[in-house]
Amino acid sequence: MAEFINFYLIPGIVLGSIYALGAIGVTLTFGILRFANFAHGEIMTLGVYITWSLIQLSGFNSMVHIFLLIMPVSMLLTILAALLIDRGFYKPLRASHTIILVIASFGMMLMVRSVTQFYWGVQLKTVLPGIQPRMTFFDFLNISAKHIWIICGALVLMYAVHYLLTYTKIGKAMRAMSDSPELARLTGIDTERVVLATWIIGTALAVAAGVFLAVDTQVETMMGFNLLLPMFAAAILGGVGKPYGAMAGGLIIGIAEELSSYPWIGDQALLSPGYKQGIAFAIMILMLLWRPTGLFRGRSF
Amino acid sequence: MDPVLYGYMLYVISLLTMGGLYAILTLGLNVQWGFTGLFNAGIAGFFGIGAYTAAFLTTSPDSSHIGGLEFPYVVSWLVAMVIAGVIAFLVGKVCLQLRSDYLAIATIGIAEIFRLIVNNELWATNGARGVSEIPRPFESWPEPYNQFAFLAVVLITLSLVYWMTEIARNSPWGRVMTAIRDNETSAKAAGKNIETFRMEGFVIGAMVMALAGALMAHYLKFINPGTLDPLLATFIVFVMLIIGGSANNKGAVLGAFLIWTIWSATELYAADLLSLFNVEDAGIRSAYVRIFLIGLLLQIFLQKFPQGILPEKRPSSPTKNGA
Image (cartoon, rainbow over all chains, first blue to last red):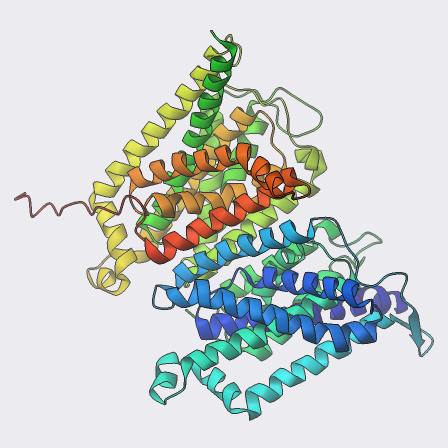
């Protein structure tokens, strides 16, 4: 039991929190800007590398400093990059068919990745040096400090998203635009401001998700791309345009991925860990077959 | 023959062979994206299914991978096309009634899952070490005639695919396709079964992609998961089609040869250019600069010349000709 919780369930919740944060950005862009943003993973990678550079520059490498001091700065820098990309490459295409925007984002994915690979190189890097301490609760619960940080950080950020969407004017405008863009425009909502807010929130959460993943594992140029499919799957599972759905979808997929290699039957892993990434895809296909609008009844296109 | 000139000649042959293989791939994408308006973000998947099927069927028995059946080439290509067609049919069943973004996500998923399988099932595919000693038609002929002969195989296949897609485009079927692409509601009102037509476009396109993959396996003689790199097997094909001209078969072929020539010629000069600016690791880094520039080229075309170099020419309506 302890082994199940410590080595499967908790890593699943950690991974799920990371997917959830990333998927909120995907689902907001899908709902408000109406396109599946293939470059979302690469924005995440960019944020991680900016964070890594800031850590090297400042010399701060404890988790407190990384999460509370450096991550906000790298969020700002990455948001700036995302807004420039929107202005240069997505805004001119806003009037086109949305699938053109999907292609543009597909191109952007490779452009951003090539910039990252050109500037930082493809060698593995680490954010946190050394072995992290583990803490024991109730004699059996054995969690490493970084996992506590990640889970708590994700909870704080998700609450912030909830607050923003429920109590602020811009948040309400975002939900209105996601539900019905025509109606939102008629009521006088400034759509460009909503677009701006969408990029800012989506990018900030993507950077957080990326940095959490980097702290948990390592820094590499494909990390964002590898998260793309789980994030899309989480957004579809939860219902496109539904941030709470994305949170639930991310957690379900993260936990399902980790639990898939638990020896449920006999003493072999149920599914070879090499196929973990396939879980997200399988869940997504089943969802599209069963209920394309997702768990939270999002948009069906 | 002068050895320098001979070297150039071999380079041009390889350029034309690769360009021709990409042209087949681009024609396949044109059926999906150009005619039908379906965005397939996992070309690499269907291409890879074709490549691996052809490799398993035509190689001699080898303990490192399954297959080794020594089938005749044409049979293996047909099998490759059928398998890709079946998989496309299944993906289409799930996604075609939904908006195009879902198809994009599902197809990139298929491509990644295929890569996972190829990487993990060592007993079947030899994993990252790949399948080697794939035979190539006419390879026993003396150099350079074997190169010419394979180029001829590629160009003949390309001509056949071009001819068939042109017939399709000009047929009533092709006109229904573009009608659905441009205005789904009015096509539905005219009594056309949209899902069936979309499915046909998607499956045919995937089969052409598998054919290109099979030929590529023979040409490279070696395939591994790296052959399925989304950059060179998916992205660049889109760039070729959009720059050449979506929904125009001539544009697709032109785009393929043009972009492949630019891609492969810049390989020769980009590194030298970077070392002029004292960039470290110019050799490795130049590849990233080329990817960035090809991406930028795509963005410029999307924004400024969405029709591509050769814009679409709609076939004239038969009634206008007094038929």
